[in-house]
Length: 296
Image (cartoon, rainbow, N blue to C red; front, side, top):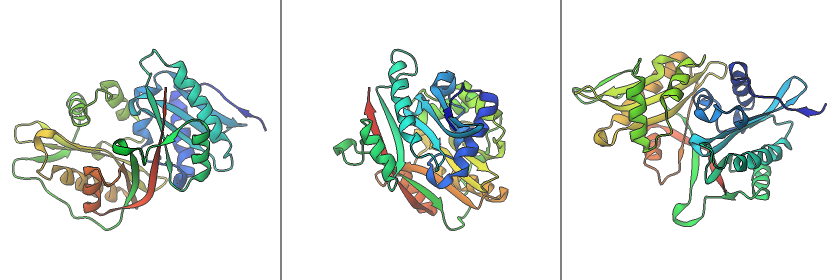
C-alpha cells in the first residue's frame, strides 16, 4: 500500500505519536518524555509536523522542534527507508522556516551509536557527527536507574513539594536555569493539559524565603511501566547545596510508587555536571547517543 500523508490534528495525533514511539521504545531516544516535548511551541505551526501513514496506520512522524534546535522523530522498524524521507522533509522544512520565529541556524538529530543505517542516512543528507569536532564536541548518553536510591531531604528551611499552580514561577526558574527564553507560559500550560500529565510528579524545592530553588519534572508511561526525568534544574543561587539530588530523589520515589519499573534520563556525556549527578545517584549508561548537525 502506498505511503500517504495528512495534516497534524493536535487533539488526536499526539497520542498516536506517543504510541508509535512507545511500541519501538528501544529504537528511539524520546518516548516517555514525549508529552513534554509535544507540548512545545514548535508544534504551534502544524506544518512543522509531518506524518507517514500506511493505510490507516501511522508508521512514522517527525517534528521540527525549534525550542530544542532538534528534529524529533519516530519510525516503525519495518519501514527503515522512511528515515531518509524524514530527513528530506526536515531539510526542506528547515529551509522554508528561514526568516520566521521557527528558524534555527543549525538543526540537530540524535541517534544511538549502534544505528549504523541511520548514521549513513544522516551523513548522506549533509549532517555531521559532533562527537569529535574539537572544543565544541558534543555527545549524549541515555541512562537507566539501577539500584533503589535513598530519599534525600533538604537543609533546614527548604521544603520539597509539588509545584501546583505556580506556572509563572516555574517558567521563570526554568528560563534562569537554562539561560534561555525557549520555555514559555503557553508551553508550560499545555503540559498541564496533557492526559499523561501527573501533578504529583512536578517536584520543586522551595527556599526559606519562598523562592523556587530547584525542580525535577518527571513523566510516567503506564503502558510501558516506565518513567523519565525531564527536565531537572537548580537555580544558580542555590547550587552546591545538594538540592538537585534532593529533587531527583523525590521524583524517583514517586515514580516508583506509581509502578515505574524502569526510570530513564538523557543527558550530555561525562563532561557535563548533570552526568556526574545522575551517575552518583545510581543511573547507568545504557546507550551512547550521537548528535548530528547540519547548518542552514
